[in-house]
Image (cartoon, rainbow, N blue to C red; front, side, top):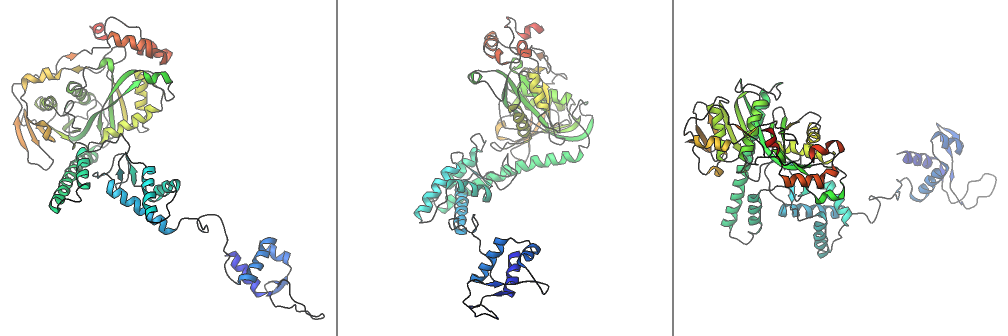
Length: 528
């Protein structure tokens, strides 16, 4: 804008005639233009003009030369960059690149209902983990070359992908995908030459599966939303069973175990060793939100099955529950831990003994089981990977500090020396004489227990399926839980391994606790 204004001033007072205009001397051919400078009708010198309009000597000379050659027209500056670079990508080339990646994603991406875990966007297209951006680029180069078009280089290809198509993501190898979705997508992909009836049937099967997964997920969201409306200022803590006329939702799950000692800048030799193990079991109250994480030392482990799950749930309701009369529970479809007859018997026992008035047990569709505990475990694991830990108490501090809002709460099941903090029970032997078994448990996703119908389970395949009932009750169960089972502790071989191999990697103040001198007697025997 400033240059155009200066060009306008130059146009008004520049002389471009072929000959000079002299009054007393003979005119001769003009070698350069003559420019006069005026401000408000008064003529000034060139130096004053440059000062008043803040323009340099060279720049003003270039403007006069430009006007002499091109007239009153904008300057076309040859700055570096895409706009004036004859080697820059054209709009058509970028458009063809975007079209190729979009079509590639529509053909190869997985179809997942709802939001993909780990991403805030709902329109994520997840490519198979076997593909990389480099492999897609190589296919793109082949396609463009065969069409006689100019392909972009791999660095530009990656940059434009990030800028223009951020919703197209390459799946990580550990991403937990639904086998039914993958199988249906594979059948649809290879159905190009099949009759239309078979194609339609395969599409209907996938659509039906996605509808079921979405409806199960919507049921979970609705339960959580209802509890958030009534939670108020309540916090997890000890409350008398069935003491508040409220409804609350909890989710529980196991996470992959962690090891200690552990160091973000780990020494090389420990990669070939097996440090002491710590299991993780979480019970999450989404309405608050907070999750109690049970830290299970390998010496405290009875078994990672129904006895362990029920014992931790029983401890949670007694020490962290909100005293609700109605409890809604969600978990995954692992039959060895959650979806089994013993957990059904335990929930029926709770309603029969007055600990709850109503309990529902709900399962998400297999392959679509990402829920709140996974989010809390993710916060925990992220903090664990960047923190040096050498004992169970260090892991407990990591759990507490994994969120500024205090989302994760630690609960030690026991200490390294065998001290029991959370009692575990043999619920299988305790409940088996009192209840009957419901057949085909795996095909159902919803179970309900009512204190008004003691010992009866109401079950349905999906959230919109008609309920059926079955009488679990066989004989009157005891009112109180069974006798606690003492943990086995570490065997002699494991103690010797930790003492000889792992002890040097522990902090000096934790060596005797984590990897102490092997003892003939197990911790359970010492407690006796």
